[in-house]
Image 1 (tube, helix red, strand yellow):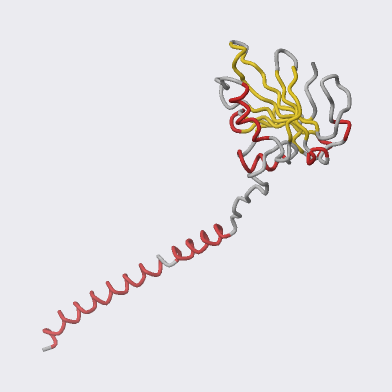
Image 2 (cartoon, rainbow, N blue to C red; image 1 turned 135 degrees about the vertical axis):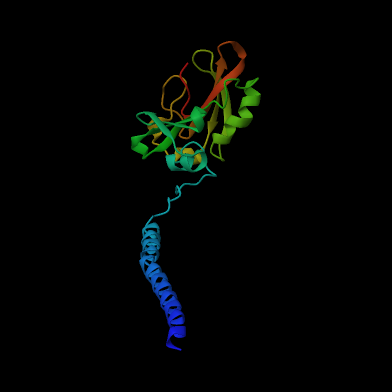
Length: 202
């Protein structure tokens, strides 16, 4: 009888040993759980990118640089107070005295420009303050044509000495201009426009 039980006992011993090995294997795998926990903790400490706190709906003359960044994305600074947006289609020029306030906006959306001043005006007027009123049209330099406007809101954004007429004299506060520059290859076309404080000299 004892001899018959020996094989059974051996079988139980082998099964028990295998189960013990399985238990040992599970124990050695336990640190994997700790590794995941550490990774989760590290990710929790990553701070999300903060959105630009500007008004993307208002990128008119006199508005702060942060508004243009909110609309067009990150800029490339190319000089003191000069910032390129949208791959150079929009250039914003600021002055330190106005705390990064836009004093001029150069707009040139493509190499083709526009077929005429009237066509260009449709796009360029979007950069004028909403209260800007047309005043007159005059010649600028190098074949430029400028349309002069008066804006009461602009008169409060800049000092009176910033508002100059075509002769460089201080003029009505709030005087701003859109200067249309002709295409060198075809003077009937407009290659860019500049929305600026004061008139361009002639």
